[in-house]
Image (cartoon, rainbow over all chains, first blue to last red; front, side, top):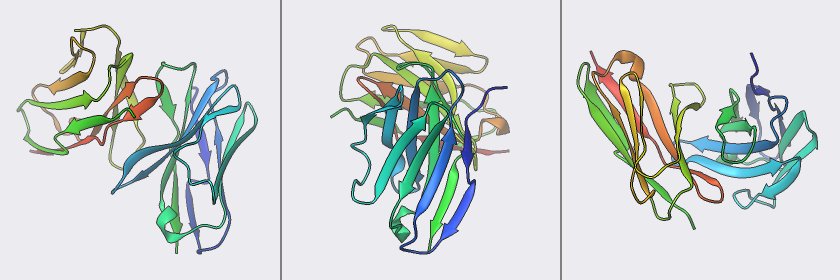
Length: 113
Length: 108
């Protein structure tokens, strides 16, 4: 049963700390997305990769957020330094190809105190 | 830039009744996808519509893509408690843009 996995599932940290979230896309999927979901803003696209290359990161605050795909089985989203307004659920999703359905991971619930 | 608007934001439905949620795009879409997110869960793909005027059914759910490929609707008949959740449309132009979602609650 192929699925997207994300770690950690929950993260509580203090303001100013570095946070790294990890995602393992479904094997064979060449497109990976990072979303942030909050009650106020809904589901926001932060960045996405195709064949490990960043295609669009316009939704991501560049000064503190960074996203990478070190290899085809791992995507990371890093926040440094974290702020309380970063508190949200962060979803990773993978897609076999652009235009196809997206498979979402279970999300990482981040709380920054 | 591309914007996808979804209405209503909230839908409170009596069990057994029908309802419709609507999705409108500021630009013509290549396709539109619908997702459902249960409370505490993650979005799960329901369906994709590609052709102008396309209508697809999944049991009690009917999805429609407008003739101009700028709007879509999801109609649910005989609502059940299992229909609770947030329904998102996502329009694909050069990238996928999600609407704000319609959160559905059901009164038994």
